[in-house]
Image 1 (tube, rainbow, N blue to C red):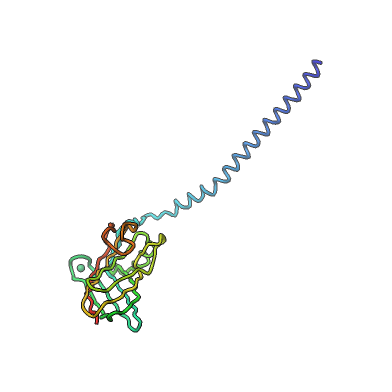
Image 2 (cartoon, rainbow, N blue to C red):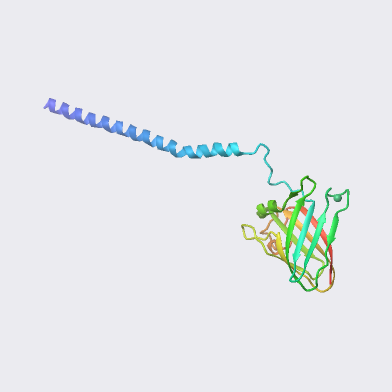
Length: 213
Ligand SMILES: [Ca+2]
């Protein structure tokens, strides 16, 4: 009887040992799998870190813009408005050229921007396109001409790199084109083109005196 009990105890003990070994083995496999899963993330993190540029460009920096060109495509004519001030505010006066516009005409408009204070000149348009969420152009006229956005950022808000212009009757008007950096696009009226509540910083503001005939 005592022998039998002892044997039974041995068997139970052996089974327990086996069970413990199995648990330990499973725990080891578990740890190995965890390391295996974490490895790609760790490699990715190291990879990302080493891709970090030595001289990171602050995305909040205002752009240096010396030149703004407005290309207008009408039904039967084209017109260009251009502003260039290589040395920035002060110093030399800006060079502004303006084509005459036709009265009561619809134009498809597009903007291009450059930093010509550098050699070679840098086109800024792609940067504004890439950072569309943080930029918006505003258009205003002293006359009957009206502007409508024809582009959108990823949130469905306007940018203004392209737009439609509808001119009014013959006469003289001033168009003001303003580029705001980090405007509040969801503030009242802003996505409709009203600069009043836009906030942010002005990257460039240009006034074109146009003749409509
Ligand atoms: Ca100047």
